[in-house]
Length: 280
Image (cartoon, rainbow, N blue to C red; front, side, top):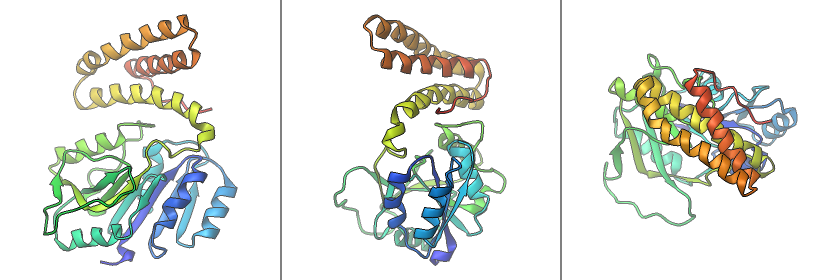
């Protein structure tokens, strides 16, 4: 296997101050497709001029994580792809260790790395497969895809705007008896909750809370049934309602706004409305 067998897909949204660390950690011989969820021409020109291996696609609108990643994945021509968040950094041996995994000829659809959030050396065991575990799901900050396994599955459900997209994809794969692993030899540093510029953090935080609740209900309705999702959501529904009034009484408007967004996301999902909410 060589670098020509892998394409990296990164979805961004106003992540200019984060993505360069990520791109600097990727070997320049690996093709990278960046999907920017805006119409920021300056960002496209800058990224493509600084990194010769990067193609930047402007979505023009904020399409969300799943739909934007699908745009990139549909352009992948290689056997394997790697979905990355812009707030991740590859270790020096990350890709080489992925190729070592491939040499073991293990049948897989998705492969996750060892995620960590502290810059320190992580001791791993030596020997074949000692660091390999089969999982029901992996997190979406870094996912290796065996592209041939997705022909009858598709990629992300585009009804999700944010949250639960990777859980949904993993569940669909498992229903078809496809394999999902984590290989601890493959290490990727993840800053976590820092994919977006801090200038937009407050408005994005409100957006996150809306979609967290919308996606929670939609996911459980999709994979189980409406009444099961309703039973799960009722405690969150009443908790949001109580907290809205509580924080209004003590004049903490920011907290009240968060729970108002959570309640709105729940109600919209329960009523079958699309995930329409977007950051301003």
